[in-house]
Image 1: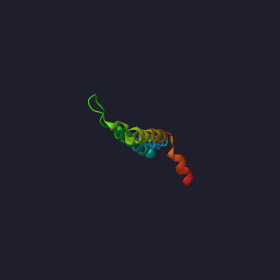
Image 2: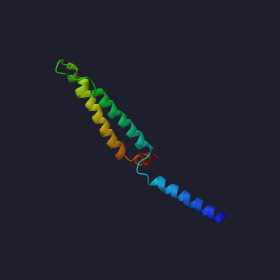
Image 3: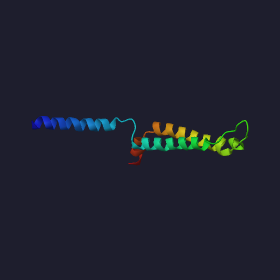
Image 4: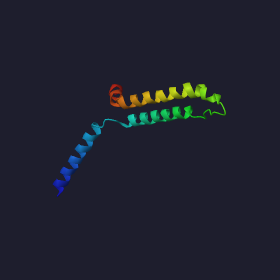
Length: 97
């Protein structure tokens, strides 16, 4: 029984080591993706606001916040999301060691 248990433990350890090294995304990637997602949401929140109706004109629809700042932040969030997915953090760790 002990040889079966030790073989199983060895196989489990090898599997965990293999699965750790073959993960396509690491913790750094997920943190970057969360920050990028927050930027995207922030950009869309900055674009929110009231609209104009037939009875009343709302000049706020042409504000700088809604037509420049919000879309720029959302775009930067999308760029950051792509970078967070593509960048391999293990490359930076090997260079620093």
